Length: 522
Image (cartoon, rainbow, N blue to C red):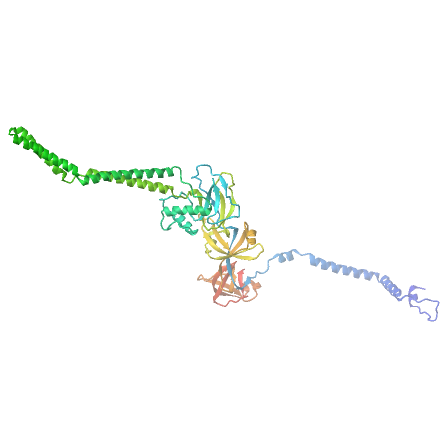
């Protein structure tokens, strides 16, 4: 019996000896028979499906030259647009700034007045120390270098009689530290100024400078000259007084006696009757001469010689007294050029010290700076000319926080191509912040212009020039992808502040609003 008959043959439900066949096996067997009977038909169907799939694959990945050329052509051009912005515009100048203490200065100490080598004997400050008024910056050959406020360097020793702007500076400095050296309007270093020098050294804890060699001996010699001149004047005056007093009583009596004696001799000769005319004539002449001498004693005497002697002696005395004054002035305290150091903006911070105790001074002795932190940077001339002293700036602290600073100076560079120097003073900083910032380089942002609130703004590339030179923007009212076929309109605008590639615009002919698309390219 065939398998087909077995699948379809009825079974006796009461025959428990014959088992029931599995229906899935009967179904599989049926499909197998169908495939064997229609094998050719199934092969053709499978081949058709394979051909269809292959056609789809080839159509997807294989492109003809014509299709490739068509795909490589550029798309239709569209308009490049950006929306109109609305907000605040700010224009900034950005520089790099070195953080350090303000106004560094190299200290030069004059050692020309020292007779020996400029050996540093003590009082050498350490880096970080502060130098204020009356501080001792250094000790050279046992003598101090005293710090005083001032701008003009000490270039000569100040002695009684000298005058000039350095004397004025000294008097102003003394007044600043509470000492009176005289009126600063008087530029002469006088006795009052000299006396204040001793007070200055007393406050600094040092004796005033000793007088130079020979000064004391000069004073003694000049005083002796005065005494000699005074004695000469007294002698000359006595001679003059004697001459002006005339003949004394004795001299007058002697003259009277001479007249009487000559007269007696004449009378006796006449009485004898000898008649000797020659003898009598001689006696008469003797009487006349005696009388003239007596009369001369009653006349005022010529004292011109005595007066001349008095004048000469007096002049010599004046010269001797002037010499004493000069000698005494030379003996007054003076201020050696090498024992004072004028510095501005006290107190000053010591940044670096090249001098060492026990060594010979080699200038510069040290570098000092202001006690406050400063920012120093540079900018191109075009940017620097936008900055103003007193303007504000910001820079970042080590923790990233913004910190303000004020512009203190904008200094032109040397030559047209040189960069300008910009100096700024930060707002107060804590000691920890100063320690972290010192010696670093920071980015400084300085606003040089800003709009007064929110304004309409467009990229600079959106601006075009009209026939009259007016500024315009082109607003797109349709789809920008339509290119030259898109609908646009021109709006005349007035421009304002430009910053970061954008410019403030105000419509003057036409409407313009935030979000409108303006053309920046085609």
